[in-house]
Figure 1 (cartoon, helix red, strand yellow):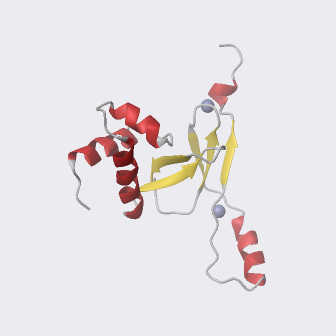
Figure 2: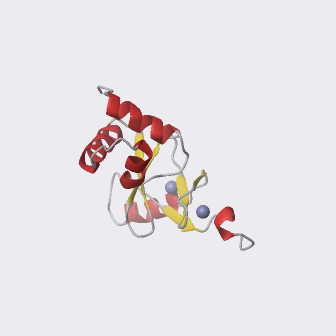
Length: 125
Ligand SMILES: [Zn+2]
Ligand SMILES: [Zn+2]
C-alpha cells in the first residue's frame, strides 16, 4: 500500500490513541480540512491491509483503531468517551460449536461489549 501524506497523518492520529475513533473524530484530530470521504476511503484501505480494525459504538457507528495484535480478542468500549480495553478471554468457542452443529462451516464471530469506563463512571467531577 502506498503511504501518501494524508495517510501518514491519519495513521499518526490513530497511533496517538488506544481509543477507537469515528472517522469524524479522526478528521477533527487531523485538522487540515481533509474531506470525510477521503478519510473513509483511507480507513477502508488500512482495514483491507490489516492495519486497522473496525469496532462499533453502541449506536452502530463505525469506530476505527489500530490492530494491536493478530490474536483473537474482544473490546469493551466506553459508551461515553469510546475508551476501549482489550479483553483476551473469549467464550465464543461455545457459540461457534453450536453454529457448526447447525451445519455451518468456516464459522467466526465478533463480539463487542459496551459499558461506562471507570473514569466516566466517577460522579465526583
Ligand atoms: Zn469513558
Ligand atoms: Zn471471541
